[in-house]
Image 1 (tube, rainbow, N blue to C red):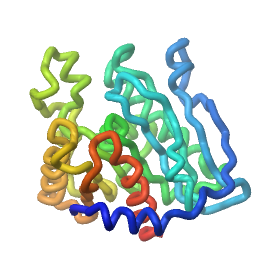
Image 2: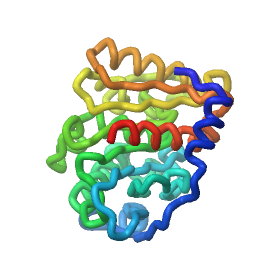
Image 3: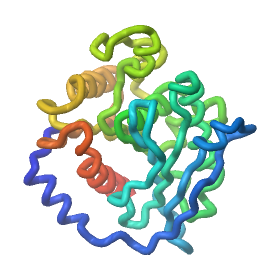
Length: 265
């Protein structure tokens, strides 16, 4: 669904209250027996309100093409008392994509095992991410083997998936490893489109403006949403944030996510 700038500014005003009194815990290691690189990258940060209970949880995966970036917690999400977890993961320049995907799965497993101590509601755990992070979110939610390794059923234990401008064909970082250009699309086991199905967790899919998005990302996501619906998915929402390109669309997308979560309480 296309969103015009005027509508987005109304949404911005609706959520313009200052961030609440959050407490932070940082640099938490979440994965198994580490080597030096794993120990450096596989860490997460948590922002939460001390003494709160029953709060929704947003597990946030940063972007960067699976080759760069750093874990962070978007300030825009620190509203309404949601707990936000910023996840770091290893890059495909140093490890395989399978290992990167396993990092993402391990971080979610850690959250589900520990977030109650911070006031999180296990029935309200949302996975969200921008660009490469959005790709990771879709893969975690649709390829059930990834979280299944940790005894987790994403269809039942994840409240919703919220990929922002994520690839749904095979990620270009993986295609580059295969000697393919960024403009050569493929669909294989590393593509969320490979796993389209009707019984996945609810989804909030968000794209930037189709005229200025990266590599046809709007059309890619529009096709993905259509195929999910044709496969019987009844709870998938699609937004296009008009006037925002790939890099700038995350902030308005955060506000759409908060509104989406509020409606599902």
